[in-house]
Image (cartoon, rainbow over all chains, first blue to last red; front, side, top):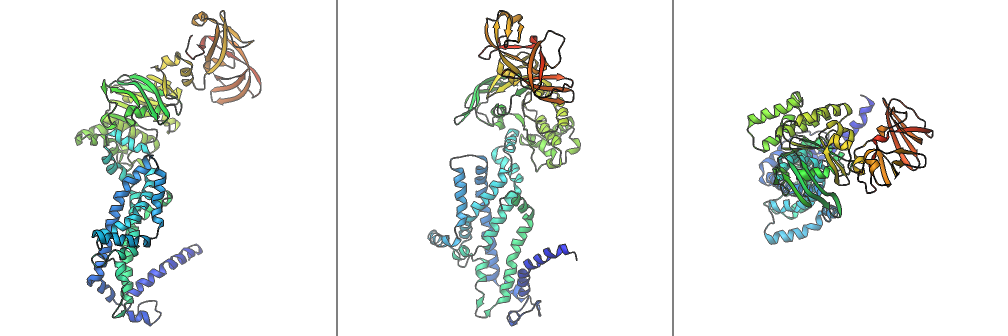
Length: 265
Length: 354
């Protein structure tokens, strides 16, 4: 092997080790996990996965998570697209201030908002719904999406808008048929970050749900059951949690590079 | 279609972009807007296209008031300095896009797109995307879109500025023909006097947000109506100096003077501005009676077959432009020859008097 490829190889091994360990654990029995060190599962078992796919408390956890994450991504982008367009195309009183203060929303820890959200949502009957978590997450995702999209939109010259208007496009038609396809990388990147934040966020998701909209991450915190620690099951659930993120990353991997080039990721 | 601007102005906050301007552009004419960067060419085009609203005044198309009309409703075409095409569509779709928006039948769209593509030699590129094309091809796509639309007014905002030299020459030759016979008003903005002369047609000279002179290109080149117009329509900059007219002679300083004839001789005695194009100030004596100008050479630029020499005479900078190679060392004293019959004379307020 060439010396040159040694360092990247070591790096990849280093990165993959925790993921490998998680995946390996998910195929072991809890007894084997607790009994000591083993690189490969001595006895392969699919019981952990079988439990997740057959037990409603588990698979509903996935469904709930995907539901509110999707709703959140859609809401965030729907709100952020026009906002980002305004920031990139118009100068208005306090635009730069507003743009900066939008971002400060992201600087507050989610925990700060857990109590007010819980109280508010309980009062208006949103508690334990997909919409509750989705809306709570927009507080963090809309500013981020606006910021990312504004970068991509500002990279598109205003002359494109003018050309389209002169060609006869109305604003909505121009926006959907010409502008959105032009910045589709940006939409992909923004969607990715909204998805990821919402997918991994635990505190708000857990606080604002009880049963009906309980996310997978919350389900996973309840592995210490009457049967003791179910570590294998937990590992299998963890493995499955990585998959949606990996799929999303696969689709936007090239666009993210563009986002980096714009300095907006 | 006629395009008429009636006393239009454009102000943004405290800044005036376009001062009161009136113009009447006739159908089938190729009009050049000539002025340096910042003179307001793009601002004026945006107003005519409806992309900006005028602050006051009226815009008429074929006699109809379109001042408040959006660009979508004006049936116009616009080609920018930057190659503006829709990046996610092929060349075919790009050319077809305004026709599709207008709801034209598919077969008719195809006919028009192919006709425009043939005129601009884009046939082999119809299936490609803009980013796969060279700059020239991208700009030809934008032009094809303007042609296929068959608009009654076409605005070209320095369309050749970002192309390399050869492509520019090629497209510049084609441009007036492209739109000839279509009955459209064409407005072409450029910052190069030479380009205006090559394109012919009509020229509006712009300076500091207003049109200083408008007329057939050759005519306004030959007969500027004021000093500003003469300056705008000259590259290198026109030479100018102050003279005193006494009896029938013009005195530039103690040593340089020349006899006046025609209109200039009939002027009342007094102080005037004289201006002469660099082409009529030569480093070698011409055949006609020439006025000798002694100056200190500052810079000499030799470009193939032409020599441009800048020299200082008294307080004034002069430029001489002549065919042939005439190397002159900087700092050297040298005599230049001016053809007095080519001089323009302006009153102190800038109006041309002779």
